[in-house]
Length: 471
Image (cartoon, rainbow, N blue to C red; front, side, top):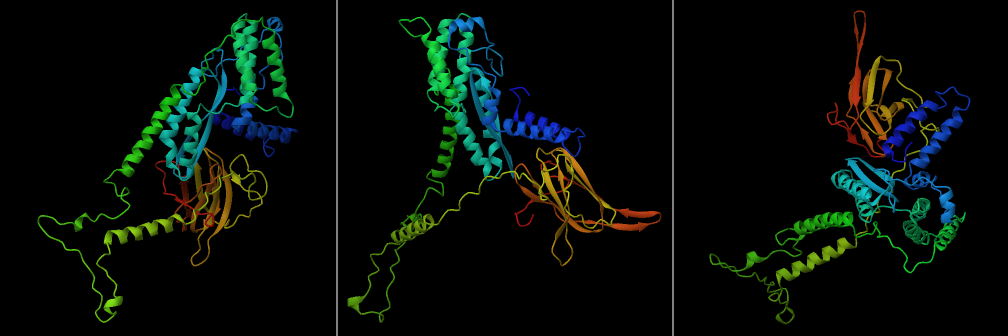
């Protein structure tokens, strides 16, 4: 797998290899070991931080102790993942993009070793993608979208320990190529990055610092240390472009929310209609207390009570009461379940969940579940809806992304289909439908029902979201 592979490429390759080496299908004696290795590889490459370390695991820094040693063993330079050019200041960067489809939100990492020019382009593309598609899933679309925008705004994630080794290797290359001034300047930048990292348990960072100190000290003394312009400084074009877009969006929201003619702008009622106008005169209303309720000495004087003031006080009290209302804590992020309901790992291919009983198997009808256009695996239940009784599942099975499954030998009755996207946790259900069987000359006519899942724009049935207790 190339270091420039996308998250979708990695997921596709994982599914292909997992299907090839799954113990239920592969006949090799070491199939279980191979399947475990595939899962371990996906756990490493599927996490942006661990993948960053894997992508740079071949970066060498051991010979940076001496420019003369570097000349004897010239290393290959580190190249940009996009343009394949050699630059003096490559960096490993992780950008994020987010897209949502109503009940599904996905966050993808765009990562690799970039020159500063290609990093600018990747950053702007990821942010533009997020601005366009992140907001349509609730609630995680806006949350993940804002996180991605602010991460990209500050130049993406650039792990300091990894980005200390990358320029250290590049300094070794330039020294071997005879460009001593560039080598020394790049080594100075690598040392500055290494100083930002606390030494790990294996003292790798401490060893790198010692190597860089020795490497820089081995150069002849000069009156002026060569300096490279930092092409990764925060105040560069992507920062200003993204800041401008974010400012424009915030200003637009503030303008429409707080303009004087907006209903949300007023915090007290508008009593301008009580003022006198040329066409009609209005007199303020002054309530008069009943004459026999209180004596003149103890009577309450209502003439100084102001309707706007009392209304403002009431509204302020309501606002204070609402402000004291405790807020509901956000729901924790969904984590894909590791095990199926039978306590074993999810299957790789479509099929029933082993060990879960199959019911109503004495019929002829069939249901086809089409998951061909979806990116996520689904866990599906066919649920019987008997009249006057509680619904219950009769079949439970797994359908991978871009797959389909046919449920056979179902007896006549009323059913619906309920399923969970295992990647996002979203649960959905179909309206109820009838399966019928009719005896005809020469055999039985039965129903073959086809159901296309929800992300297809022109699917044959409208799905509805389900609560956990409905699934």
